[in-house]
Length: 427
Image (cartoon, rainbow, N blue to C red; front, side, top):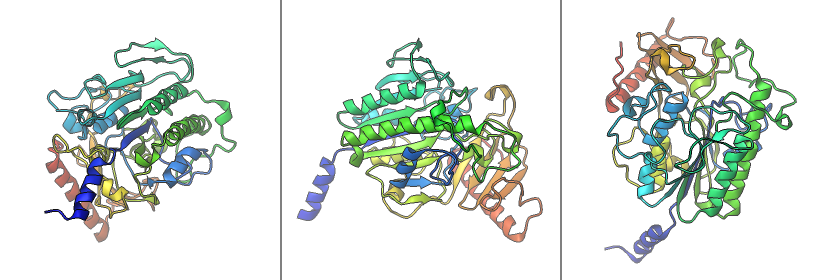
């Protein structure tokens, strides 16, 4: 029999309002292109403040570094090789996958709203969204007067204005009209190309981030920074709407880059490759439900967010998920994650635009090391804090320590493969 104190605590828990979930995603966002990680050359005061009021996972990564599969992982809670949405050249979930995380939230009583970039074959309705006030069907868009869809059944329409501002206004409208628990899925296309920068946001000193490789090929940091700073100003409007409406205390807010951006690293553009600028992203969790502690280097991945959303909503997953909930950690508990994993599965040329092949790989990160194994069997180990440019493969002439580290990390990858039914063959 429950004591009176236990009974009152249980009753309070049951009567407490379920938290709102606001997920904000940028597109092609270099992990150092915020002020919060220590880049003084870019102005992002709103995201910096959000990070200071929550947790800034400085070593957070995405589980597959490409636009479509990154979103597929966040919707399904499964790795790209599990859910079938493997690349931008394979954008549909496999049949019979079961309800997405968003659909599970909707069934539990959440209003689920999509605003922004979609970039998946399956429709928003099929993935669990109850409304889509303003959204971009495909993967890219011009910034001024874009073609956007108004309403969940909408068709492409020329929409006057700047896309970052239009999406932010739609998000603010959702927040102001909210009644009861909701999930807002706000996915910007900034800073994805083709960039249109507003001159008011151009930095006076557009130097690359301090840890960006010195031998990287030239990159237009001025325009890239300006697009991000403009997005930051618009995110400020969204956060302000949450606070003015009195929702801050009961809202979980996540800001994530859908993937990184190489910005000339190793002579490369885009993402997909296993290098830090590709897989590592801005990863901030904030809001009144999060115990603020600023920077945290614990290894986390985007695959952990779907489990986190369901945990905060007190929804039991319909099927096992591939990630770990971060709720305990965000509440001030000890970290459970010792490893974070990422993968690239689709080695076909059509997986990328323009068509080219990137060899499939699996990688695992700890706080200090990253181990990569490619489909061909070649391997690499990097100590990224000491070697941020990933120049020195420690397995070229491994010490006893580095051989031990690589063996342990390879073992963790193989355990992960078994747990997630990964078809990757370790040679």
